[in-house]
Length: 72
Image (tube, rainbow, N blue to C red):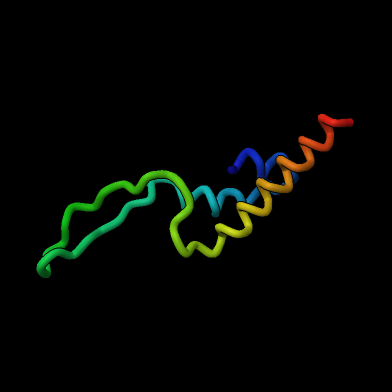
């Protein structure tokens, strides 16, 4: 995902911010009033994440452009 953002010209703070959101993402659970040990979440976009539509559209755009260039 970060490679695609860089490929379309987005560099600097935005890709680094997105990378920070999705890398080494952890979760904590409270069970019966006690905190369970934090655990790592699997990579991917979280359900309800506001970035999901943006990522989908960006990646679809890059794939469509690559497909169009391949046909030419």
